Image (tube, rainbow, N blue to C red; front, side, top):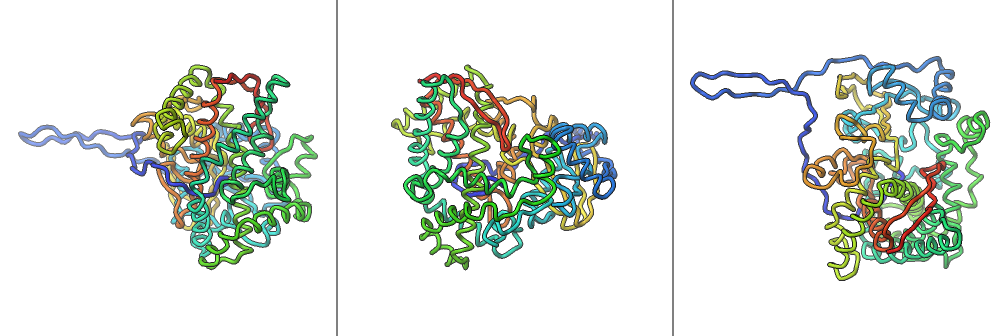
Length: 510
């Protein structure tokens, strides 16, 4: 997923576009002789405004903004304070890491649901080498290749590699539901045992192991525990991902040390060379049928393997690692009433399907589906999107029109766009049934976690997460499996470098 940029499984989805009900209109009364009065509406023209904000002195400005972003203010206050200061959801600032990792940290920030979608329009913005933002990790971390996530759709390899990802899932689709059940039943049994022994259970480490095992079993037909890799997959991936993302992470070290180690210089790739080789060997050994398809597409075995590894370990595993605990945090806070409604709905539909979880049964669970979408809205697994203007652009917020010059970098912080108060009622709240019913479903086009609206689908010509429907499906499976087994639960929430740290403090079995 972005961290979730992976495969696509066809789910019935909404492709109909709904007219926005948030535009401002003024009535114009037209009188016609001896005919009824006709009211014609016309959009109010927004004023053009210069983009506010500043970048500061070279070196000093980016460094100061970096300290504010990570330490002095934190992400949310960093953006909130500038919205207030500039009286605008569009403004100029610097984004980390800045010197000496990023040569140009200057961006134009988009923080509302109206301006944000320009980042998905590849006719207007270029996506080349922007997956991680204003810097790109060394290709030594991906076998010397620029993998799919860093390619713009205009590049020939983009289409070939995205087709390979689509093929992977289509060839293994029948294994997804049974292998998820098998793998996550093992996780839940481990949680039950830990709860019995200690009265509490950590979710994250078990979820990490389950996520990797599930992806390997369902998509590559192998249980990693029975190979040379053993149970080391999540740990190896963690170190490898850290080498790529350290410029935009904080590990909670003393401020000066944390900033010096993580944000000032690139950590050398040789630190994880042996770890990466172990992962590569695992995927190379278990991808023979995929290499046949890759060669048909004109992709070498080596390039295919590095891309399959990245898609599985960075995108999909990373997405499940971050999103599942975050989703469970929100569901836990929703309370017993929501848990009871979920359990009743899920158990009823599974019973009607003969006691088995099926795609059809899950489609008949509107509350469960809404809960997953709401979790993706409130805490999107990838918060940041970037795009470089291909041409001079005019971008609209709710309040004004702004002119952007060709070559300028656009940056969107998604948690603000998906909590836009001019689009969503009670935007900061987790509302379990927000997307239930016809009116609720109309709001799905403002759920943007997949690098595109939830009502649209990934293609070889866009940068929407190739595994958009796959991620939604496995998230639905997690909620479904959980409430088939348990009635309700409570958690303690901590922080981690990536997402939330969850400790289950009570767990009532069905």
